[in-house]
Length: 136
Length: 115
Image 1: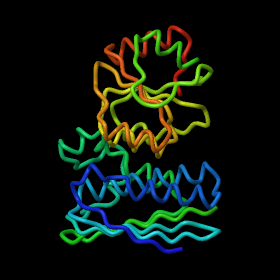
Image 2 (image 1 turned 180 degrees about the vertical axis):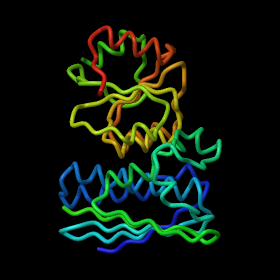
Image 3 (image 1 turned 180 degrees about the horizontal axis):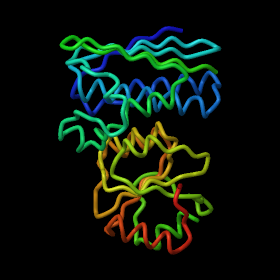
């Protein structure tokens, strides 16, 4: 099954909508609850990152009986140093993002913990792509 | 600990969801930082105690499989938050007590921390 969703930068009202849809789909498919939780936590962190940092983004979800593959591509400022961004506590989040309860520099490390495979690529001034793969 | 007992100890009010008389909670986590909430790993039934009242509080709990949220220091739950919580069969409670006082009272009464 293939699905595609759009995410708007700065739209905190709808942040998490895609993660919520994916959670419901995985439940319906009967995926193990711990794998659902790991996947949606990683996805939600990534979705909030688009809302917090980018102008807009696209989330594509490829779900089959063996795995879930999620690709989040955004148009935004990009990440100059991905290794630095992967470190716990490093954040460039705005005060508004912090008011929403995020921006503690935990997002990327937590995505890594909750993914079987995580790939992050970025071009400064263009955008960032995050791929999350979890096996069932 | 029974939710009814929790509600009574902190002079709370259930503002969304049904509170079955026998509904119990194994442990609690207190934070205004959703980034921290998203790092919790537990199989136990968990209550979040927080002073952060916005839609992302509810979303974070949805992703983290947290079904009970207690909002402290008089923070008010909005209608949008109630709707999202109802979709996810959550119970939302409010108290005027501070985060520290709420946590202290519940811990002293036997409610465990998640870690």
